[in-house]
Structure formats: C-alpha cells, structure tokens
Length: 274
Image 1 (cartoon, rainbow, N blue to C red):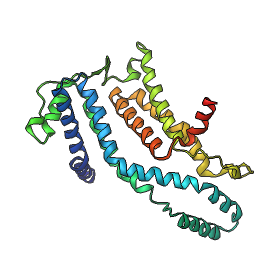
Image 2: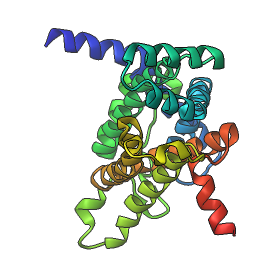
Image 3: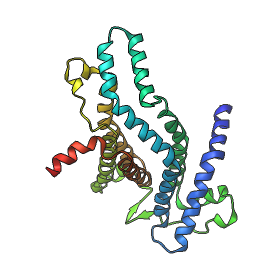
Image 4: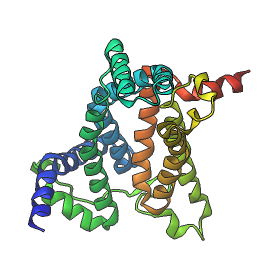
C-alpha cells in the first residue's frame, strides 16, 4: 500500500495540484468579470487550456495515425503476398515504413504522456463534484498555492439550469430529458472516432480473408463501442464531467479537421451533400 501512496503523492505534485490551482485561477478570473456560471466556464476554460498544452503531442499522434492509414493498402498487399513467410513479411513492411519515413511507435508516446494529465483532470473534477459546496470550498482552499486564490464563498454549481453535480441516472425517472446529455456525448465521440479513421476504401480488402484482419475489425468495432461506453459514463457520472468531456471532444474534432480533414467522415458528408 505504501507504493500506491508514493505514486499518488507524485501524481499530486506533478499533475493534480497544478491542475487544481489552474482551475481555481480560471474561476477567480472569470468571476472577477462577473460572467455567470463561472464554475462551469472555468471547467470549459481549463479543458481548452489543457488541450492547447497537449496540442503538439496530439498533433504528432494524429499525423502519425494518418500516415499509417495512408500506407495501409501497401501493408495489406505485403501481408497477402508473403502470408506464408512471416520474416519476409516483416522485412517488407519495415522497408515501407522506412521509405515513407514512418516510425510505428511514434504515435504511442503522445498517448502515454496524455494519460496522467487526463486522469488527473478527471480526478480533480470528480472530487469537486462529489463534495457539497462547503466541502469542495474547504478542499480547494487547503491545496491552493497562493492566498489570493482562496475562495470565500461557494460557487454556483449550475450551468444553464443544470446542476453540474447531478448524475443523470439518479434523476432519469423524474427528468428523462437528461438522457440527451449522454446521447450528445456519445454522438460527438462517434464523430471524432469516425474522423480518425481513413476515408479511403482499400479495394484490396474485398478478397476473402482480408476482412478478417484483426486490426481492421477492432477499429471498426471501436468506432461504435467507444462512443457507447463514453455515453454510458456521462449517464452515470456527474454532469460536470460530461461538460469537460464534450469540450475535450469538440476541441479534438476541430484539431482533427484542421490537420487531416474529415477522414472517415468524408464519404458520409459527400453522400449528404449529393
């Protein structure tokens, strides 16, 4: 148990503490100009700030994924040609990667770096939204780095009439419209997941056996599974977390579009416009 305490202390020092203080700073600044729903907008602002900080890493990840998708038809042809010779298959695949200037592992590092930051943000929001106003206030004032960040009164926990601490599942029987939060969250995640897929159809996969490629099948399943999972989380966790996640996803959609376009969503958009 001691090792877990040490790990948490490191996380708190490097991520949880700074993110909490940044959230409070944004809240203080937004409150100073009398913007309503200051706490809700501070969550949005914090998410945007973190997205900007992570922008170089996520941009590298998106570009790496796009280049891997671009050479996917070549890789599929090599696998089909040398399916009985694994060594030759791997050699030819690495030759393609070298000729295209692709490092297959380059997309992993950005993901690994993002994980502790995203987890810490989730931890901060979960802690604050699970406590009542006075408990959250006392918690914040005990962890801020500077006295000017200490808050004297509890914030408004609502956002356009919705309580950020409310869990949609708990009030669904009385207010069923809250299910729309989960639906919107899942829909936005589906759009982003679809955009992250290649919009180019690989005709070489029409032959028997090619469609059984594990990676391709897994990606197709995750396009639907992951949005449903995120939608379920938004249904069973406080609304404030949905506010964070939807802001995070919208920023991701804009970044994805700016760097590589509509991706897998492009065929659908063309059909709609036709």
